[in-house]
Length: 237
Image (cartoon, rainbow, N blue to C red; front, top):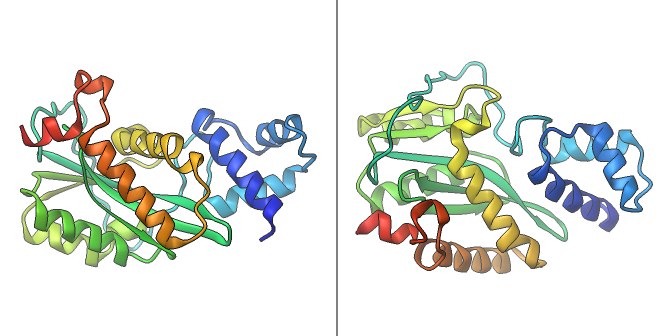
């Protein structure tokens, strides 16, 4: 992949966070307006590569397997009033000069605390399972665990640690990104406050810098929705 395509993908990524309802036609017009004379076919190819789908405001990185069991969404109308009641997870991507890394994180809904995270250069379920086991080994287990319907999260390897602990599994309805809104907000904060401000050159650089950001996010970043307190304050105090 050439440097110009990577630059266009950066621009698409940023605009997608602002206008997830833009399809390939509007994205083409947006890039042309910035002085990049691309055609719609190229934009469609880049959006497919990135997993960007119109309306659904998140990278569609975790494809569903129709032979995997899908669980119902359990959180509609539920009051999240304490830590370790509901956890959630998702996947996003991080650009490097040579391509992409994939990032997964687990978050506590009540406190917004990032419980664990992992980077991978492929979309196999292993890095998601590692992050899950790390969180389960470091914190009191949740009552409900929410994911999307992606193959990484419907796989037996991922679900087994939850089911054996009798944790209820909840899955987003197809096409409803607001079902997992707190992780979506985490990705937005991470990208605007960390990823877009840096140009990671290596996997190690990305891992170290993202690790520093999540430490800041948990322990020092003040959240308006939390009364200008930190996730750590609500998760442990």
